[in-house]
Amino acid sequence: MKISKRDWVQLSSYVDGELNSQELKKIEERLDQEPGFQLALEELRQTKTILQQTPKLRVPRNFFLTPALVGIKARHHPARGYRLVSALMTFLLVGVLVIDIGRGFINMGTMAPAAPRELMLEVVSDSAAEAIEEPALVEAGEEMAADNDAPETEVEAEAREEEVPAPALAAEAPEEGESVGFAEETQGKSTGEATADAAANQADDWQEDEVVEEQIIPSQTNTPESSGTPVPSQPTSAYIPEEEIHQVESIPSIDPFRILEVILGFGALIFGITAWVIRRRKS
Amino acid sequence: MTDLQDQIKKSLAGDLESFNQIILSYQSLVYNQAYRIIGEPDAAADATQEAFISAYKKLHTYRGGSFKSWLLRIVSNACYDEFRRRKRKPVVPLYPEGDEGDEMDSASWLEDPSEKPEDTLVRRELSEAIQFCLDRLEYEFRTVVVLIDIQGLDYAAAAEITDRPLGTVKSRLARARNNLKDCLQGFKELLPQRLRHVGEV
Image (cartoon, rainbow over all chains, first blue to last red; front, top):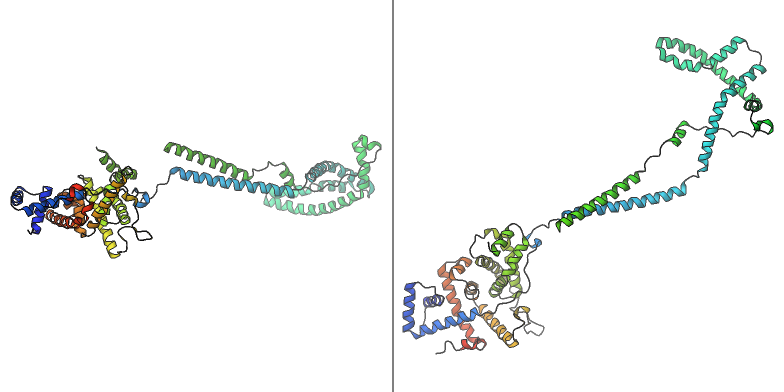
């Protein structure tokens, strides 16, 4: 018996119960009348049964998706940034500490001994003491010059004394006024010239009076040392600029490396704690 | 709200872990569909992975109804792409072979460790015989018969998945069964006892 393609479709649908009532009636009539039709039906049912018993295969692996597979960018953990900054600041802190320690070793090797500074202070104090004694020496020198030189007239002596503060007058002259100062300047100039001559005379007098000074000082001071013992030679005064004096007395500045170390240390600590807190909250 | 609907909702919100739970429930169905259509384990795995990736990206197109049917449609498309790709480059044998040319055992064939060895052998030989006959069908007929007879879907679902009219599905199914019938007759000794004598008048 030959079965057409349409018959096969009808039989296949009949096996699955997919025929409408009209088609179902026709098929059942043919099944009752045609044994071959019945055989074909049985073969189709067998085939369907075999296929329904097809063994289920186990999956070779799990087919889970990852963000990379679906093109999702991984979200960075917020704590990660804080940890990175904390680590970076710690690294920088270590570097600054190493540089600071190395700088300290270098300074220790090239640093001058402390004794010269003490000597400098001693010289400063000595020169300050000498500066106080100078007016007395000047006066003594003047007295000696007056005794040794030709007697001066009283006018000349008064003029010399007045000439001593002339530079001060000349310096004050411009403050009073131009017209007035001009007159006084001219006056100061002429007096200044006389002062320069007087200063030169004073320098000569001082040199001549070195021996006299040594003789005068013990009588003026009246110290036990000056009674019988020889006076030790005074150390020569060294000129100390005012800037250095003020520098010694000034407050030391804060090392910038210390500031940097403090900032980096606190920064690393704060960021590290923040990252830890965020991770704890996340978990 | 069912677990599946809840998982779909979370997956649409971007929760990949929820979608992986869906994969865990349906990966056996999808892999078997892919393997029976393509006939090769590695290609079936690739198609399965591609199908799930596509399903995740197109999850917003699921409008309700049978999620199984919706998923199998995506699988069928992925299998068709893989099938066409392998058709252009037919190099892979049906089953991996060893150095001596004999077939290598694959873990996918060992379904149940607790099963008796003779039962496992019978099931394995039956599976191979069925696959052997499926591979001789044209792609369109193979897809329909796998959907209806192996996966258990009805005609309407198969028509929706394959995007073909109902009459076309009926016709392709009938033709596929007829061809399989003749092929499976050669493996009669592998069939269960109760199925061996059917057809003998």
